[in-house]
Length: 291
Length: 249
Image (cartoon, rainbow over the protein chains, first blue to last red):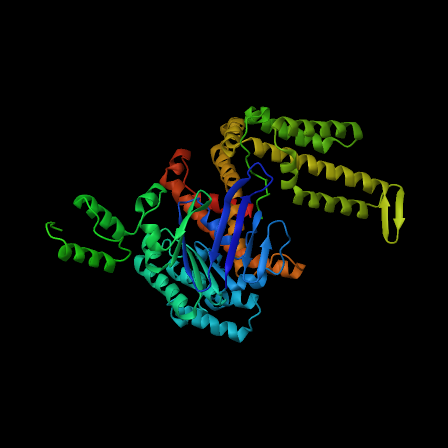
């Protein structure tokens, strides 16, 4: 499924003294089966943009096309519910939305709302729980007896069980331990590769961005500052730093090294492998420098 | 969704009403409430209406904003008005239409009660709109100072009030967030009454749990900053936050 935003603008609390323009002049295209990362400083409008992707917020001007549904500013939007099944959002700290007596019921909540039969929903709950790496015997437990990390996984499973075509993730791993982060990010990537789910990820982790995304959107002060592939975006790291953003560790290392050597050693290294091969080239290719 | 809610909110500005001493504002409001309940004839009500309009005027709060924010309370007023005119059976019969009978006293009572509601809501909203929570607390604390002599826990009470006021917008934000998260999971907050009632549960339970958690954290943070020592009492911090927030809900 494709999502296209055209000149989207959103103002919070319109017609009050608190009115504030959160995003403006937004033109994006989320292609089918793509992995898009949105990065930007806190308050740059990332979360606001995300909520437009499944019509939780409706633009105050401009239009947005989600699959075959077009939402124009000022028009009364109808039939938004099927759309919310197709575009699943995992909010920041999704564990705050858990409420059922058992993990199973909570995961089934979404699918049941979208008219999935009970047996099928339970089946999906079982599968989703496995997907997020939790044992099946948790199904009958209360979500409030789980640890924070487990609760997060259950909440994510609740969205996965809806079987969305596009998965929107708002800092899904914030506050998790490093291993949990890795596992969850890998799981999302597998879903993207195997099932063809499009992913839109908001994150502060530039390592995740460079490792998984095929497109990056840089937001700054409510609008899109730049977009491109990770290679394009991270090839001007100084610009990112000026925006208050970080670059992946490997690129940071490379920059420091280049500064010390007084020359460039190759393309920006998006992964550890690339960094190693760059360093290797440095060692074998040119003489006269001690690495 | 909760955007338009203004109850308990502070609107920073520099109007006459903003600069007024919070103590005077609080005393005036208490007097005003007293007067409101005494006023039962036309001339006094005209004075009250004028007073209310005058206060709104000098507060420099945009009128449209004020009324939009209090819209849902006007439904409450309308509801009480209708109840009154339908169920008061005194005085002369004015209208008799099917089973609907409207009596003179009912109409009078209805109008009076609605007006009282409106005064109270408008004027108390003005207080919170023009006075920051800290000012309100300080004002109350100073006003109640004499009560210290009879060992009344003035400071604690003021603290409780400020916590309560402080958390109204926070809880509103939180409600909004959970609302959206559940909407993303297919809950509809519109539609038939049955649907709406069902939709309340996935909203309220997370809200309560988060509020309790927040209260706990607040209590710990307060203790960590030595609030209990200042008041010279054993801390019931947990209860302060918890009970207050529960009340709010």
